[in-house]
Each structure stands twice: as C-alpha cells, then as structure tokens.
Image (cartoon, rainbow, N blue to C red; front, side, top):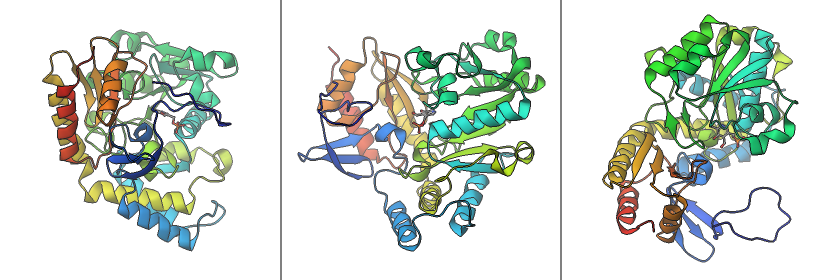
Length: 382
Ligand SMILES: Cc1ncc(COP(=O)(O)O)c(C=O)c1O
C-alpha cells in the first residue's frame, strides 16, 4: 500500500494513503473526515492514547513556565521524573540517563558496556532491531540497513534468538555486552521461555559480559507488567526505554545498576536536549496515567481478550504478551492488513511477512477491542 508523494522530505514514505489531523485516545481522524481505530499507535508511541488530557495539561503547564533548560542547571521536574521512573524500574536499576530516542538510549547503553568492560565485541540476536545510529545499527540484524557501514562498528556476533544451545556456545567471555529485545517486535513478535532468559543472564554474568534489555517496546506496561524484566531473577544490568515514555514527546532513558554508574565519569554521558523540562513533565504525566488508569492490568486483560479473539479463527495464530500482539496469518499478512485498513483499523507490519503487529494504546477501550474482533470476523484474506 506504499503511497507516492511528491515532497522534499527524506526518509520513509507513508504506508497509508491518509493524512491524520487529530487523535483522541485509541482513534485518529483524517483530513477527509474518516476515522480509524489506532492499533498501531504511531510506532507504539501512543502508550496513553492520543492527546491524553493529563499529559496535554502537564506539558502545556510546563511550557508556560519553562520550555527548556539543559542539564547545566538543576530542575525540580527532572528530579521528580527520575525518582518516579526509578521507583517503578526493576530492583537494582537505580541510575537513569535521559536522552531523546530509542537509538540514542541503546547507543549509550552499548557505549557504557564497551567502556566499562574494556572489551570491543558485542553479542546480539538474529531478528533484532535496536535503532539506526551507528552502534545501535551494528547490533540490528538487518543487513540492508547495516551493510554500508560494515567495519565501522565493533565486532558483533548474531545468535539465534530463543535457542538454548546458542547461549551455551556463545563467546560471552570476550563480549562487552549482550543486547536483546526480550520480545522481538519488528522481527515478528518472538519470545523465549523464562528459563532461556535466566540462563542467558547467568552465562553472561559468569563471563563478565553485561546484559542489556532493550525494553523500548516491552517496557512501561505494554506486556501487562511494568517491565518484561523484574520477575524470577530476570534483571539486566542496563535497560533502555523510549517510544511511549513521554506519550509522544520525544524522550528516552538508559537505566543502569548503581555500581556501574559509579564507574562512569560525569561527562561520559551527555545530551543537549536530554532531560529537558517539557519532556520530563511528559514522563511524569505518562507514569501517573499508567498508574491511575490501571493501564498495566488493562494491557493484560485486553491483550488476553484480543489474543482469544484472534485464536478463535483457526487460520490465525496469536503471538506475544499483553498489548504487544503478533497476528500470524497463513499467507502474506499484508492482505489482511489492507482489509483491516479498509474496515477502519490501523495495524503494523513486521519483518516476518506472515505477522501483523497490534500495538494499541494501553488506554484502549473495550468497545474498540470488540470492533476490531468484529472486523476480523468480516474480513477474509484472499
Ligand atoms: C525495540 C526497539 N529498539 C530501538 C528502536 C529505535 O528507536 P528510535 O526509532 O526512537 O530511535 C526501536 C524503534 O522502533 C525499537 O522498536
């Protein structure tokens, strides 16, 4: 469904032939008046829905007061945001560096690991996506994006994801870090069993290799818990966040163990815009909304309902956890995506040609889930 547009804008072309002008919670409206249920969230960013009143108000109030000041000065809103985030992070991840995008959060995580271990190799997984800056790209398993820069980044071994044998054989002893999306999103909503994550961390730590969880999609409640990490001793050394952290105001975070942070010098990390007051007001409001609207529990229950509705169709399979959902089709999923679009639903694709992704806001209404499942009954991939 790629759309031809004549514009001086560089970068990806719109995939849908629509111009979005307004959004409210789980719906968006177009310039021609059409309305769509947003099960994509603008790349999974609309975590608290579109234009949440509390986020809007907090950002507007902050902008009236002070739009920006850098880390050269203390800001109460920054201190409150970091405390609020640390309270919710898995135990031990007590120090946070704020930046502006997911790639930057991962770039900093990898830099920290390379610097603190003194090693120059990294481990990553087949099917991964970690961003488009040079280090983040070097651990992204997409040769089309990466190959032009081969040789410029560190040495990276890509291991098969969720494969128990691979982690027994991997060279953790010479790697600075192993980085993973606990549930691979763009790779087709792939996850492993709990034993695999625990063993991966065990093997890495035994060999002095740091573990980085890229929770840019799995974090902040999407999988029905605050973070994928946390339970059953599955806690990384570094965890990265972005996407919905500011409900659409660009902001990212690299959280790490306090003892690792103690080995860094203050100027090892830095960013002009990172930790700015407008972004921090958005973070605070986002975390408050996730709590006050019981979004974590909603992600679990609505995710289960969507998954059951998908599974009711023998030709589909449901993948993932909470509201990070993969819908596996038997043929190319693009056809189903196009039919859902015609029925008024925005859904995401993945690099697996047979998997669509559903990444709706955690404030998704039950009514919208019903509408989606009704639409799924109506459409038939031809
Ligand atoms: C898991 C994951 N990591 C990193 C990134 C990169 O984030 P950004 O596009 O904000 O740089 C993305 C973006 O899709 C992502 O899904």
